[in-house]
Amino acid sequence: MTFRTTRSPEEIKTILGGQMTDPYFPVKFELSPAKKHYACVSSASFRQGGLTVHPFPLNHPQGATGYRMESGGAVVVHASDLEHGNPHLDRVMREYAQNADVLVFDAQYTPEEHASKRGWGHSTWLEATRVARDCHVGQLVLFHHDPGHDDAFLDSIVKQARRHVENTVAAKEGEVVGV
Image 1 (cartoon, rainbow, N blue to C red):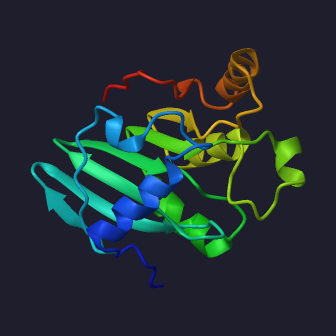
Image 2 (cartoon, one colour):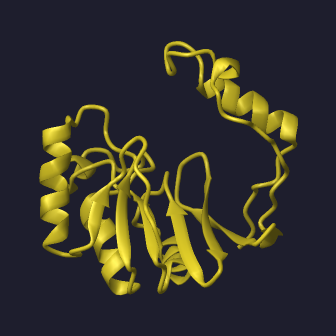
């Protein structure tokens, strides 16, 4: 299966800048303190310094890409903007997640919420635990939280998820996960 991840650096900058404007983002993107470097990334694996990155396609209406990143024997898989339910892409995602030290997985919805939001391109905390368990992941990081969920709600989701995968956390701003 071929998937498109190649975009020019200028196109990436324009797309990202468009997402980070009012009303979606409260600060002018060019004023954020992050150092930004835009580069072309294709569907082929590549090395950057001591990091090897393996892109793979995710199930999302506008297309999305996951990444398996390997360095010094550690493996982190980042899979946001994905909706489970496409047998082929679910299988591909699980292949890349195998034996990862850390899996960052789209968990925007509860299973009940997902029933009415099929086709929106996001998954559930329960599917995240299934993938983490089946793929022998060391730590699961639930990511891409629904803006309608407050901190107490997210804490309850983590508690439920830990019944399936003990080493589960919710992604939080400023949080550091070690491998």
